[in-house]
Amino acid sequence: MQKRFVTIWFRHLLTDWMTIRQSDLKDIPFVFAVPDHGRLIITAANTPAEAQGITAGMVAADAKAIVPGLKVIDDIPGQNLKLLKALGLWCIRYSPIIAIDQPDGLIMDVSGCTHLWGGERGYIKEVVNRLRGKGYDVRAAIADTIGTAWAIARFGQVTPVIEPGGHTNALLPLPPAGLRLEPVVLERLHKLGLITIRSFISMPRSVLRRRFGEGLLLRLAQALGQEDEVIIPLLPVQPYEERLPCLEPICTAVGIEIAIQRLLETLCKRLQQEGKGLRTAILKGYRVDGKLEQVQIGTNRATYNSSHLFKLFELQIAKIEPALGIELFTLTAPKVEDVSPLQEALWAGKPGLDDLGVAELLDRLAGKIGQGAIHRYLPDEHYWPERSVKVAGSIRERPSIDWRTDKPRPVQLLNKPEPIEVSAPIPDYPPMLFIYKGKRHQIKKADGPERIEREWWLDAGQHRDYYNVEDEEGQRYWLFRSGHYGGSQGNQWFIHGFFA
Image (cartoon, rainbow, N blue to C red; front, top):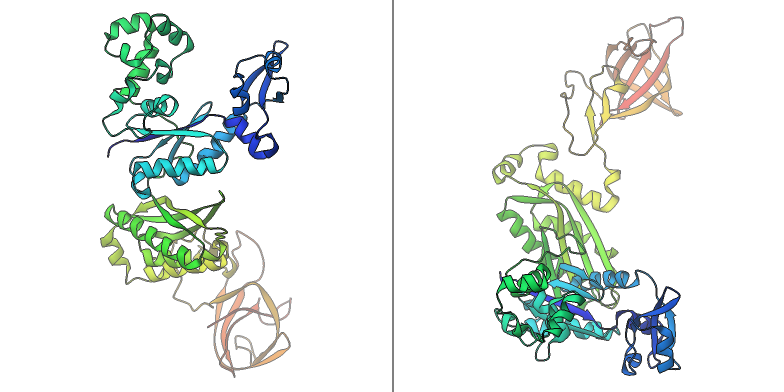
């Protein structure tokens, strides 16, 4: 793909920001200044001040002599960087790769993005008009290299759009300052009468190196595309991300649903082709007012099933507040895993989490009640009932041993056995009835006893004799007598669980 870059120059970044905050300053000359060796040095001047000859670097006292009504405002250290970060994050809607170009610019890698706005001219026009609408005086340009786009944005006079392959010719009439050179190098070039890039671009590199140093050669090579220029994006670029700009701001739930479906179809098609499935997905909606709406889903197993993923997002749509409208949607999959189509087919007929339907059901439940409300229990290597089951560390943790199936066990085990009143005939016979929470249960069927000894290496106490009993209503219970019948501690009976 042909690389294309946009640079944005905020000509009066700090003063525009202050004017936006205090509109009464719009037509008043004012500057920002910082103390330096007992003097105030101007760091930024607004347009009315510049029109009267005030520029950055001047002493504030001298500027006031030129413009008596000049307003001087204390500069805020680091404010320009803070502003550029905020503006860069706002511009994410136009490109996923945006870097700060201190002290007053942004760099955007727009490769493959401009067609979404009808081409490069429409793209540049949209970005510039939106930023100017916010109150910032900006210039922007697009070219094959960052260096050329930077130079055109600040010194270009013809067009902000440099056609692919035209960056060399576009540089020729520009001043050397367009190459982002050090002041001492610019002064040396000016003294030698080299007032345009055309005047020295064809000189031998050895001559340029000897007279002006490596810096000039590096900047020239970067502007010509002979040397790569590395930028650090504000946000890390996700390998699995899809973007959907909207022709008109989306304000309705139906519009959001359509956007999600389109994004999922595109992303899942790519995941399937690469043998991947997502575990987490993040949907972001960039609103017209500059605010960001975000929802996230997760799955218990990797999947590229777009219809299932849409059902999960459907549960989150009510959390999205479009306000005046959402103009850009992005869908990111920060966590993906390998998916084997053959393995997935084998899973289809197996129970538990390996069953695709069960995994998708858990995903939907987690979307409604929260992931923390779902628990999984696994068998543990203990005979004592309270210790024979443990909580899984995660929903996908595999059991280290098999569930015990040689003896019946209740589907619901009480955390702590609860005492009951029992009428039992003779030793080793099940009770004829029992009273639990004030209700009398007449026993019709019973099986037992099953003696379970206490794990003496863990604690001391009586053994238990368990009975499976069924009352006259068909309900089944797990009862036990603690210790021997008629022992020194008496006949203590408990209920410990309920069968289905």
